[in-house]
Image 1 (spheres, rainbow, N blue to C red):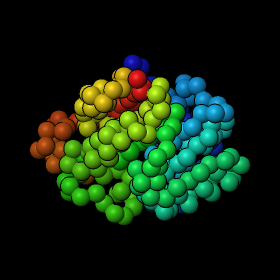
Image 2: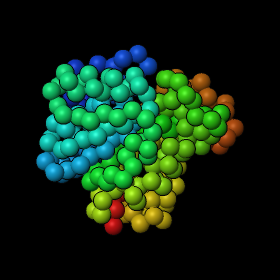
Image 3: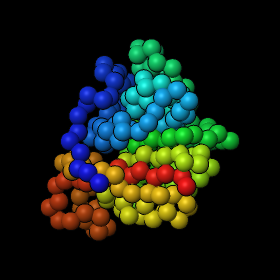
Length: 228
């Protein structure tokens, strides 16, 4: 496991983002660093769950992989399609729930930066921009859905790359994946200052035991899992 120095260099340059679309940030860059270490090329089928601007999907497409990107946000889908057109890269971008849009399909690699911020309301938001980060009281609503769906989405030997906050419990994700037949580990971490969303929920997070008093930095974790 490594602590990664985050850079923008491996992500496509000149990306646009329509209003409310999640822009590449520290979690995106941590995921991109891991994606750059994977063997991709023609014949590799890649799925990105929650594509946002399409930055990671375009990175994979630029290396020759066949890439499908899914997002529940119509604005994100439009953004990713425009960025693919601007960069002249083939990218299939689908609108809707990842499980419904990928039924009966399997992939060699799945990359995802899902919503993972703990939120007081158990219901997932239906509008942007909150739907890009809110994920229920423990932050695991989407994480657990992806883990549960993984055995049917990944081909034997396939790889999952997922980033989320340490507030959600990295060990829970690794254990969940191990129970369903995956070899999983925390591949990298990064410490970043709390953003405005976490700062606005400080009192609630402390009451839930998810954050310590006066805590100012969030640990991001990059989890890599491989299908046995």
